[in-house]
Image (cartoon, rainbow, N blue to C red; front, side, top):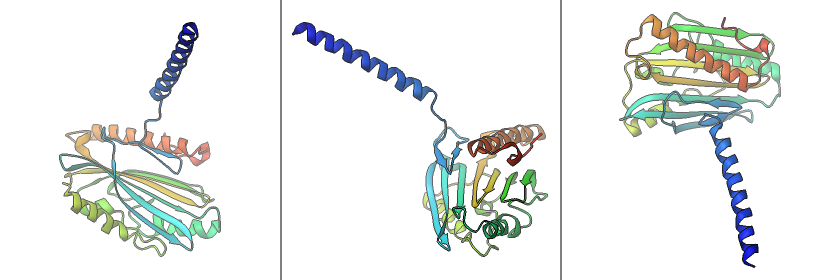
Length: 245
């Protein structure tokens, strides 16, 4: 009986060791992202995990859309604000939906969204004109009102004016301080009936004290890689990816 018990304990410990080994091994190579959003692995630019701070939900002819907001802060000062958005028609009425999404990201604001302008320090867009486009841009924000931008309120479908109310609400509730200068990085993806975007608003002092040309180029390189990672998450073919060369 004693021999049986000892054997059982050895076997039990053996399986416990095996379990712990595979558990630790798998976690050592775990994905380093804080949320998964429509196949995108959303990473944080800060060490602190962003906290969900607000959301908006709605429908257009029974097709859902939604905004979510996440904030990282330090001593009451915003370090990072992330906005995610989706609008999905589940593959229905593709031509009509393609036109509708374009009124949001191209038509409602000629100086922002997927359009280029002088205020952007980097801009790139790939528009295949066949139910697919992707856009990427970086600019510097200097005031609080830009946090709920760009202004897409000229569209006839999505209640984008609610973004200002939602952002103001959690800014006021938490009494966040706004950095003097912020990077705004915008990633847009549309394909076959689904529009998604990810906006990062980041305190520039997280990265550099001096926004000289060399430092700006370094940040652009990092942000471009983030866009490439998103394209990989979405399993885009080469002809669906922006050529950053």
